[in-house]
Structure formats: C-alpha cells, structure tokens
Length: 143
Length: 148
Image (cartoon, rainbow over all chains, first blue to last red; front, side, top):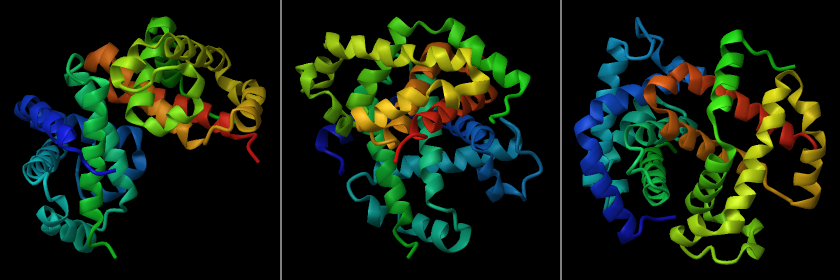
C-alpha cells in the first residue's frame, strides 16, 4: 500500500494547512490517546501529569509533530529518512509498534476535528496511508 | 458484563441523541469504502463504486449506511445487554454475510471520525471520545461473538 503521486500531493497540501496548528494537534492527539487507550500511559510513568493538555503532554505533542513534519519532508524515502528515529524507537524507547496505529488513529480524529471542511474521505485515506507508512519506517530497526 | 460509569452512559446517550442516522450513516459507510477499499468486497451489487465521488453519490451506499448506523440504536437502548441484543446479528454477519470482524473496527473508526467532525472539540472531548469508542468496541465484540 505505497503512496501514489496523488497521495503525496494531497498529503503535502493538507499538511501545509495543518502545520501552523501542529503543536495544538500533537497535544490534543496525545491527550486523547492517553485517555482513550490508557495502556499507552505505561510509556510515560516518569511524567508528573498525564492529564489532557498538561505541560509534559504539550511538550511531547510538539516533539511528535516535528517528527511528522520531518516525515512529510522525507516523504519520497521514509525508510531512509527516518532511520535515526527508528533507532530511537527500537533501541531506546522500545515502544511496541502496535501503538503507532493507536496514535495515528488519534491524529486522524484530531485532524477531522480541526479541519471538518478539508478532511474529506480522499484526504482521510491519504493521511491514513501516510501515517501507516511512517509507522512502518519507524518499525524498520526493531528486529 | 460491561460496566459503564454514569459519565460514560450519559456521554453515549447524549451523543446518540444528537446524531442523525440518515445524515451520518451514509457518510460513515462511504468513508469506510473509500478509506478501506477492500471492504467493497461486500457490495459488488451496489453499482458504481469506482471513485470517491461515485461512492458518495451512490444511493445504495447511502441506504445501507442508514441501515447499518440505525442498528446502533438497539445497542444504545440496551447498554447493559448488548451481547444478547446482537446475538442474531452476529450469526448473520458470520454465517450469511461473512464479514471479517476487523471490519467492525474499521467502520467504528470511520464513525468516530464522522462524529468528531460533526461535534467538534468542545463537545467531543477526550472523555466523550473514550466513552464513545468503548461503546463501539463493545458493539464490535458482540457482533464478533457468534463467529466460529
């Protein structure tokens, strides 16, 4: 299920609209993930406050979204482009890759909330494919 | 037995009370067929599904969307007994329609996106999303129950 040229165009133009709100999107997606999928909290036991919109959640939302921005810029070769991030997730963070799907779902929900007029089914499928491709690239170094 | 908090019950019934099945059913089903095109395998008799525009404009898709989403009404009205309420529907989905249960999760996610778009951040808060997704997961589990 690789990204077509049309998918990439759709993704880049939608991302141009979303990028100015990246921090808000990242914060909201992470907040929702922690509430709706409480098992994901196990990765953040070192945070003082896991409630929606808290300072650590906000800071981490920003970090995650800059990763997404990097992925958009390297959309033509995600595997190589995200190698360092893959090593981070595989060897240090050791996030179970099943969680990439969970975060992706919450990102899509937040994008739908923030852009109800732009998040058409075509944009939805392109973004879903993109986030799946990013997840795959992040899983590259796991084993 | 699924346990619902009072907050979850009121989130679910509150949302359901504001949802128009006739409006959202078609949207959610069309979105499923576009975002996960392999689900079109069940709809060969529906005519033109060749593009997002064709799917969105297809009257059979719209009608079926209303049917499917309307099915959630019984679950909302029987929150403490969804498993039994859906026993027949589960057999039907397994034995007659042969739906891969993973498709229930896919449709649930599409419904959630439609609900999020409709109600926005002040209504569809993280807590409401939690309750809503828990509800859909229970429905999906009930529908998967009679598979063998």
